[in-house]
Image (cartoon, rainbow, N blue to C red):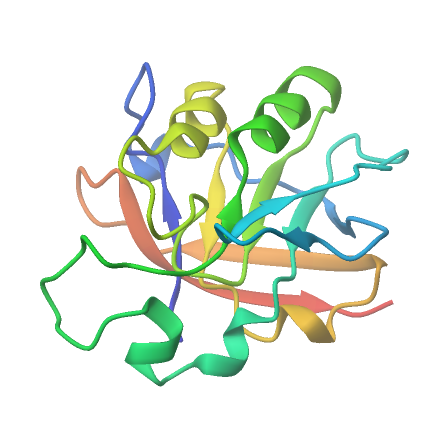
Length: 172
């Protein structure tokens, strides 16, 4: 699984080389994420030490990798209308932007938005605040609830607004 960084949806498109790199500790939501029937990850958010942290949504969806049909909800490479996987809810993204000084958010699915999203509100909210988002984070379930230091190093692809990354963590 290749993790990625995206800054392509927002009020100001930043190049990958212009995105400030978060230097922070990982902090997971303390309770399990609630995945609704529509596969939107909503959070009863109790994050009290969030300044400069990276919040990682651990949906457990990585267990479907590399089975394209289960991971993305489709078998065909260019069919995006039927994508089906969890993502952050727009309400959670809005709350995090307004109430916490986070360095980044990350998720173990193919997108910060749920697969069925057509308006990419989470991307617009989060990236519009000029904060990076990391997608396709492998082995997120192996991270402890807090204390890990996450490194997510993007490839510098010319004038790209998104890029594959090498993500790894140092455990406490």
